[in-house]
Image (tube, rainbow, N blue to C red; front, side, top):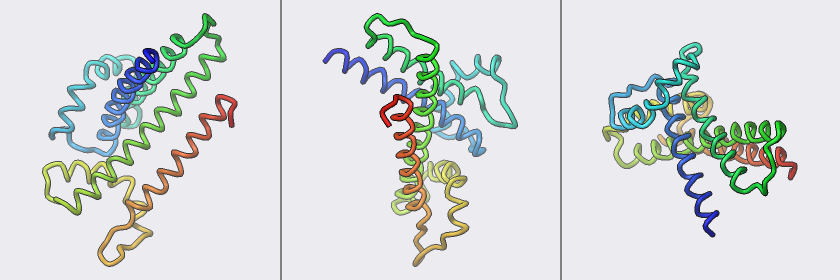
Length: 189
């Protein structure tokens, strides 16, 4: 029971940090201003790691690679801790390290998909409830790169934009694919 609680706390912290680093990457990639409460929170919560990481990992074509690398490293650290705490004295082999790195990559992608999922749902709800809320422009700018390609092919039906629903279905399919990949990495698929 104690180990399960510890693993839950570790996973919660790892997912939160990964989400913050991925949100920073997404905001920079979508060219969303950081001059809003969400942007200020992301900067305050991630500068301690991103600024030193930029000295080691350069950006590439305007993409904030340090934030992506940090998100992956957080997941790597989490899985290494879980492996170390649950291992029965087995040493970590290079093959196990490779597996942990691959699983961390899959979990980083899973967290990114859930982040997009959450942004799209909150954007859709806010468009119905309060489209002029102060955070609406930020959320719309974050969702736009993912919704715009679908909106080209899916016309509004009775004034209702169905692209968020289609994107949610696509994200669910991708999450299922990631779950299958994770099982196959562990030899269970």
